Amino acid sequence: MITYDYPFKSYEVPEGFRGKPEYDYEKCIGCGACAIACPPNALNVKYDKENNKVIWSFDCGRCIFCGRCEEVCPTGAIALSPLYEMAVRFDYKNLKEESELEVVKCKICGKAFTTKRLINYAIERMEVAGAVINEEKIDYLHTCPECKKSGAVEKFISEEHFGGKK
Image 1 (tube, rainbow, N blue to C red):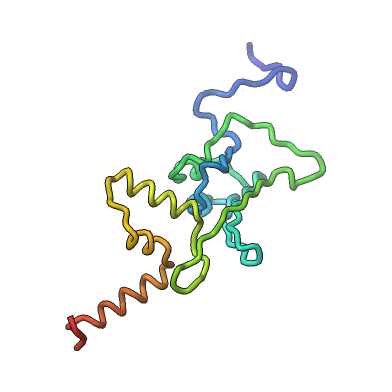
Image 2 (cartoon, rainbow, N blue to C red):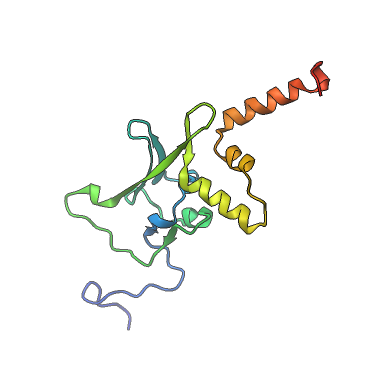
Protein backbone atom coordinates (compact mmCIF):
# COMPACT_ATOMS: atom_id res chain seq x y z
CA MET A 1 0.00 0.00 0.00
CA ILE A 2 1.43 3.34 -1.03
CA THR A 3 -0.99 5.68 0.72
CA TYR A 4 -3.05 5.60 3.91
CA ASP A 5 -6.79 6.02 4.28
CA TYR A 6 -6.23 9.02 6.54
CA PRO A 7 -8.41 10.79 7.71
CA PHE A 8 -10.91 7.94 7.36
CA LYS A 9 -8.64 5.55 9.21
CA SER A 10 -6.20 6.52 11.96
CA TYR A 11 -2.59 6.67 11.00
CA GLU A 12 -0.47 4.52 13.33
CA VAL A 13 2.70 6.35 14.25
CA PRO A 14 6.02 4.49 14.63
CA GLU A 15 7.64 3.89 18.01
CA GLY A 16 9.61 6.92 19.13
CA PHE A 17 7.26 9.35 17.33
CA ARG A 18 7.41 12.80 18.88
CA GLY A 19 3.82 13.93 19.22
CA LYS A 20 2.10 16.39 21.54
CA PRO A 21 3.67 16.59 24.99
CA GLU A 22 1.30 15.25 27.65
CA TYR A 23 1.43 16.84 31.11
CA ASP A 24 0.72 14.89 34.31
CA TYR A 25 -0.19 17.46 36.97
CA GLU A 26 0.12 14.93 39.79
CA LYS A 27 3.81 14.32 39.00
CA CYS A 28 4.78 17.98 38.45
CA ILE A 29 6.94 19.59 41.16
CA GLY A 30 7.14 23.03 39.52
CA CYS A 31 10.92 23.01 39.21
CA GLY A 32 10.84 24.86 35.88
CA ALA A 33 13.39 22.59 34.15
CA CYS A 34 10.99 22.09 31.25
CA ALA A 35 10.54 25.82 30.75
CA ILE A 36 14.28 26.45 30.83
CA ALA A 37 14.95 23.68 28.29
CA CYS A 38 12.13 24.64 25.88
CA PRO A 39 13.68 26.31 22.78
CA PRO A 40 10.49 28.02 21.49
CA ASN A 41 9.27 29.03 24.98
CA ALA A 42 6.14 26.91 24.66
CA LEU A 43 6.45 26.08 28.36
CA ASN A 44 6.50 28.64 31.15
CA VAL A 45 6.66 28.47 34.92
CA LYS A 46 5.92 31.82 36.55
CA TYR A 47 5.03 33.11 39.99
CA ASP A 48 1.59 34.74 40.26
CA LYS A 49 2.15 37.16 43.11
CA GLU A 50 -1.50 38.22 43.29
CA ASN A 51 -2.77 34.66 43.88
CA ASN A 52 0.40 33.38 45.58
CA LYS A 53 0.68 30.43 43.17
CA VAL A 54 3.18 29.13 40.65
CA ILE A 55 1.55 28.88 37.22
CA TRP A 56 2.73 26.17 34.82
CA SER A 57 1.59 26.81 31.25
CA PHE A 58 2.00 25.11 27.89
CA ASP A 59 1.23 26.63 24.49
CA CYS A 60 1.02 23.80 21.95
CA GLY A 61 0.95 26.35 19.13
CA ARG A 62 4.56 27.27 19.91
CA CYS A 63 5.80 23.70 20.49
CA ILE A 64 8.29 22.24 17.99
CA PHE A 65 8.02 18.70 19.47
CA CYS A 66 11.75 18.47 20.15
CA GLY A 67 11.29 16.46 23.34
CA ARG A 68 13.65 18.54 25.50
CA CYS A 69 10.91 18.93 28.14
CA GLU A 70 10.56 15.16 28.46
CA GLU A 71 14.35 14.70 28.69
CA VAL A 72 14.85 17.17 31.54
CA CYS A 73 11.75 16.53 33.68
CA PRO A 74 13.01 14.82 36.84
CA THR A 75 9.64 13.26 37.71
CA GLY A 76 8.35 12.26 34.28
CA ALA A 77 5.51 14.79 34.45
CA ILE A 78 5.93 15.50 30.72
CA ALA A 79 6.06 12.78 28.09
CA LEU A 80 5.73 12.96 24.33
CA SER A 81 2.62 11.17 23.15
CA PRO A 82 1.62 9.68 19.80
CA LEU A 83 -0.96 12.48 19.34
CA TYR A 84 -0.47 14.47 16.15
CA GLU A 85 -3.93 15.89 15.42
CA MET A 86 -4.10 19.20 17.20
CA ALA A 87 -6.15 21.42 14.94
CA VAL A 88 -8.57 23.71 16.72
CA ARG A 89 -11.46 25.58 15.27
CA PHE A 90 -11.67 29.33 15.81
CA ASP A 91 -10.25 29.30 19.33
CA TYR A 92 -6.48 29.29 19.75
CA LYS A 93 -6.97 29.04 23.54
CA ASN A 94 -7.76 25.34 23.06
CA LEU A 95 -4.06 24.80 22.32
CA LYS A 96 -3.08 26.01 25.79
CA GLU A 97 -2.88 24.22 29.13
CA GLU A 98 -2.34 25.72 32.55
CA SER A 99 -2.08 24.53 36.14
CA GLU A 100 -1.37 26.04 39.54
CA LEU A 101 1.05 24.87 42.21
CA GLU A 102 1.22 25.91 45.85
CA VAL A 103 4.24 28.02 46.85
CA VAL A 104 6.50 27.97 49.90
CA LYS A 105 7.65 31.18 51.54
CA CYS A 106 11.08 31.61 53.08
CA LYS A 107 11.03 31.05 56.85
CA ILE A 108 13.43 33.98 57.30
CA CYS A 109 12.31 36.76 54.92
CA GLY A 110 8.81 35.55 54.00
CA LYS A 111 9.40 35.78 50.23
CA ALA A 112 7.89 33.08 48.01
CA PHE A 113 10.71 31.14 46.37
CA THR A 114 9.68 27.60 45.36
CA THR A 115 6.80 25.14 45.28
CA LYS A 116 5.66 22.93 48.12
CA ARG A 117 5.98 19.92 45.82
CA LEU A 118 9.63 20.71 45.07
CA ILE A 119 10.47 20.80 48.79
CA ASN A 120 8.66 17.47 49.30
CA TYR A 121 10.50 16.00 46.30
CA ALA A 122 13.86 17.07 47.80
CA ILE A 123 12.94 15.42 51.11
CA GLU A 124 11.90 12.21 49.31
CA ARG A 125 15.17 12.11 47.35
CA MET A 126 17.17 12.64 50.55
CA GLU A 127 15.31 9.75 52.21
CA VAL A 128 15.98 7.50 49.19
CA ALA A 129 19.67 8.38 49.45
CA GLY A 130 19.64 7.35 53.11
CA ALA A 131 20.12 10.83 54.56
CA VAL A 132 18.92 11.52 58.08
CA ILE A 133 16.17 14.13 57.90
CA ASN A 134 16.24 16.48 60.87
CA GLU A 135 14.76 19.86 61.74
CA GLU A 136 17.90 21.71 60.62
CA LYS A 137 17.69 20.21 57.11
CA ILE A 138 13.97 20.95 56.88
CA ASP A 139 14.61 24.57 57.92
CA TYR A 140 17.37 24.83 55.32
CA LEU A 141 15.01 23.61 52.59
CA HIS A 142 12.48 26.26 53.67
CA THR A 143 15.03 29.08 53.30
CA CYS A 144 15.35 31.07 50.07
CA PRO A 145 18.69 31.27 48.21
CA GLU A 146 19.22 34.93 49.19
CA CYS A 147 18.83 34.18 52.90
CA LYS A 148 21.08 31.11 52.58
CA LYS A 149 23.73 33.30 50.96
CA SER A 150 23.42 36.00 53.62
CA GLY A 151 23.73 33.39 56.36
CA ALA A 152 26.84 31.88 54.77
CA VAL A 153 28.49 35.30 54.41
CA GLU A 154 27.68 36.22 58.03
CA LYS A 155 29.10 32.90 59.24
CA PHE A 156 32.29 33.38 57.17
CA ILE A 157 32.81 36.95 58.40
CA SER A 158 32.28 35.94 62.03
CA GLU A 159 35.07 33.36 61.81
CA GLU A 160 38.58 33.99 63.05
CA HIS A 161 39.80 35.15 59.58
CA PHE A 162 38.12 38.50 60.03
CA GLY A 163 38.72 39.09 63.70
CA GLY A 164 35.55 37.36 64.81
CA LYS A 165 35.34 34.68 67.46
CA LYS A 166 35.56 31.02 66.58
